[in-house]
Length: 386
Ligand SMILES: Cc1cc2nc3c(=O)[nH]c(=O)nc-3n(C[C@H](O)[C@H](O)[C@H](O)COP(=O)(O)OP(=O)(O)OC[C@H]3O[C@@H](n4cnc5c(N)ncnc54)[C@H](O)[C@@H]3O)c2cc1C
Image (cartoon, rainbow, N blue to C red):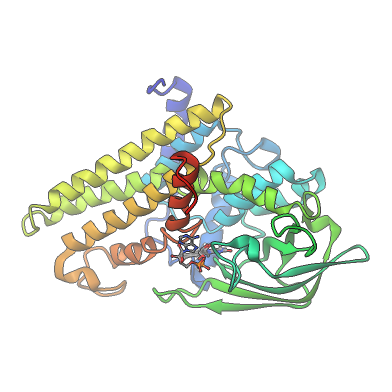
């Protein structure tokens, strides 16, 4: 693997670094998981889009600049380095868009991708149900064939930012007579459709963006089915590996956290437990290791290899590294670590504490780490099924 960046990649990095330095809001925006913060983040997403930075790797007709996967990784490194706002369009641009590029028809792509990239129409993922999380194929929400489309019934839960988004995408059971992975269909549903009810759910940190969504005979036209009817499972699984292994949590995020941790160590070292220095160094090495491992993964992908079960290893690594880094930061902060945003005594306005609370969710979302360990054991280590 060639570890040097090409001239084109270096000038791409310089161009995004300069643009971000000039445009990233000087004051952090309110959390994108609150109503006010979500609206403020969308203004930022539009600014990004208008300057051509919202979806760098997409084709130009949809607002991208056809960046390579390596350039996308570079953009992500610069984005987090600049401490730019979280992407509230994430569940659309990173999770639904790849599905549409691979399985959507031309009408769907033309209608949906532009407004998604500009933050004019926002998407939440509605896969989980109260009794279907890890075992997603046991989902019970149903779709019934009617003239011109389907009628949906059931309940989804844990839809990130679903309380503020315009629409959801999710799987519904359209054929109960075949084995359970086979009779599922991938639908897109506007949240203002007749029969949809959205209930916000508050998180541990007080943000209220999570939603439960109830479907009471909701009509969805045929044009909002992605791919073939009853083939939704294959479509969903085709994109979960890129979510776990690459797009959802790129290395730039953790490199930026590690750099902040090193700064925190420098500020706190006079009073900190000297043993914490090792944890800070380890965090830095872990983030760099994840970076170069990901560059290796992208190299293999560009050579035509699929990511496969390696994505599960990745997901375990980044989520547990994130918890460790935040635990180290809280230990360095000492007695002020439990002070929340708004307290005049915190040196960091509570951002490490909030980050820690969110890091605890990392081993759960995008498939729990217990499930990922099962995948690693069975598919990579070839151990017998548990
Ligand atoms: C911050 C956050 C954001 C999320 N956003 C979304 C979203 O936008 N859209 C969406 O659809 N969902 C979302 N989720 C839900 C997430 O996908 C589920 O929480 C996850 O899949 C686990 O499902 P569950 O909560 O039903 O737990 P369960 O599946 O009930 O699992 C409970 C526990 O049992 C363990 N377990 C279960 N089965 C096995 C097994 N076979 N072997 C070993 N251990 C097992 C699990 O690892 C877990 O520890 C989000 C979750 C979080 C925390």
